[in-house]
Length: 256
Image 1: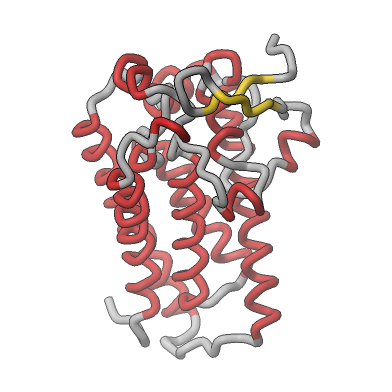
Image 2: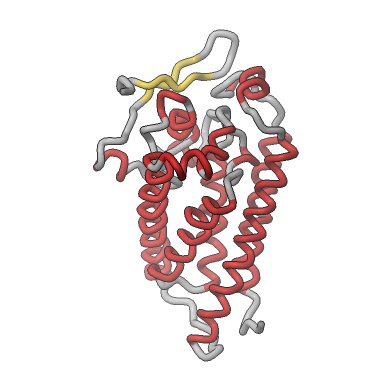
């Protein structure tokens, strides 16, 4: 297996390093009780899997991710005759970034929703992710390996191919998508968080989905909320201060 430049390898491994560094920052911040969406006691009692199990599960998914990524980059390299693809103009790169975001959102919305609608898939596949009723940062990719392959790995490959981005652009895109996914599961509402300012799909929005009343809503991930709004699965919420510290995302729409 040969690559013309190291961008392919960087595109494979940098997002994984980013995952553990960014989620590690949240771990180092400590309990952050004044900014939590759930109390520490709820995290300890409602989640039915140990953090050691979560780490092992994430590493398994990332192993699959590495394998598929290397195969994909090999295919792209061979299809271009091993030639190094020139980096396009900046505006083209931005357009590719946006296209990849839309494609990934579309793929993950419909696959994620299918995982909930299909009782077999939910029971045997997606329910593993929902054992984290109270999400935390390094549990963002705690999934059944099949779910990780379908939603994240294949979704990422499709985004890469349809957008036409180069392996160098892919380094930044997949690193950004990784940061966004970790942030959505961090369980915190931090003041000044740019991702919360720029995106309505955020930690509070996704927390609604992880609660029992929200499992039929807020399927969109990781960037926008458009598909939820278009297809009637959007559950708005209010963010209110919780007695004793922290915040609580409360649904406004009555769940059926």
